[in-house]
Amino acid sequence: MAHLLVTGGAGFIGANFVHFWQARHPGDRVVVLDALTYAGNRASLAAAERLPGFRFVQGDIGERQRVENLLREEAIDTIVNFAAESHVDRSIHGPEVFVEVNVAGTQVLLEAARSVWLAADRPRGEHRFHHVSTDEVYGSLAPDDPPVSERSAYAPNSPYAASKAAADHLVRAYNRTYGLRTLVSNCSNNYGPYQFPEKLIPLCLVRLLAGEPLPIYGDGLNIRDWMHVEDHCRGIELVLEHGRPGETYNLGGDCERNNLETVRLLCRLVDQAFEDDPALGIRFPAAPPVHGQQCRDRIELVDDRPGHDRRYAVDSTKARRELGFEPRLELERGLAATVRWYLDNEPWWRAVMDGSYRTWIDRQYSG
Ligand code: NAD
Ligand code: TYD
Image (cartoon, rainbow, N blue to C red; front, top):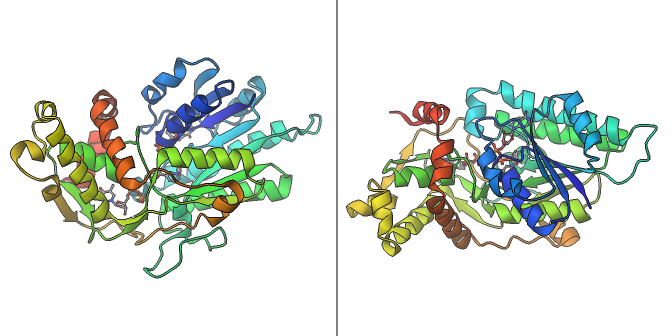
């Protein structure tokens, strides 16, 4: 039986990971440590809280003593670190907190793990420190560049990506210097249930339902490599169970699409959902299909994001060869399931779109 500490477990990927892990490892202890920032929602863990072996702790990964106490008291042997500030646009407006949480916070977590797991008077035992990172650390690719592998150079372009890159280097250093059994996974763009509606897909979805325009940056031809969050969770599980300590693994969706293609596909799926279920027109009277319009007509090209990376694409050969990793949910199927989830879980997204969310969105997209 493993004892997991899942930091940032009330966020998008963390919450999906908790549900995924509980379903697959019902005997394990799962402790979530989350500061509940604007992006963290305890409601995303409602189903997890009903199961035995689960505990939620509200707290900051930067509180060293607190983390150490938790590691000892819960006999934690596995840390999965999702805790982070994760939105590129927010990092452009306020980079400081990205350094505080993503860099300094990760270092405190590493130090707490080192002092508890590698203490001189303790048997070393089995432990795993899994750091969840992003493909954005590698920077932008030209159209003909090969996808990034673990050997590609780091070249982060946004404060978010730079903070994640710095954290990755610290994780590596704690392995090489102290022998902490670390693992890093660098994954491409995720979508799926519980994603905060500031990221492209849920943002467009909830705006369509409200009859609002879809703001697509620049010429809309920036490419992302999309992966359903469930595939990412499966990838992390494989890395945790079979990855070699000290190694990093790239996880990609094998699904490069430019933003216009992705958003047009989403629009088509929403049109279809309204056609299939006339009751949606009563719940969402401002949505384009209710007015005889197509959702894609609401796409608007707006000013580009500064430093906007043109293309991401991830080569997962190492994870495929060593771990048998393979993304399973093809984009159209995964997006259709995501549209369904947001339609079925309106109270969840209404609740997270509170005052501070509105302030941010109004600042981003007014005029
Ligand atoms: P998210 O913003 O939805 O969730 C982040 C969570 O971390 C929130 O619950 C928040 O409350 C918590 N948190 C923030 N600061 C904290 C602190 N100081 N102490 C404790 N908890 C804190 O992010 P996400 O999209 O779920 O991403 C999770 C991780 O995966 C991040 O590290 C991100 O860099 C990485 N990642 C994300 C994607 C993606 O497409 N979303 C892709 C690859 C990697
Ligand atoms: P995002 O979801 O913010 O993820 P990331 O920047 O980490 O890749 O954005 C995905 C893509 O969508 C990215 O190219 C930026 C673009 N985008 C828009 O065009 N409009 C938007 O309102 C947002 C949030 C993103």
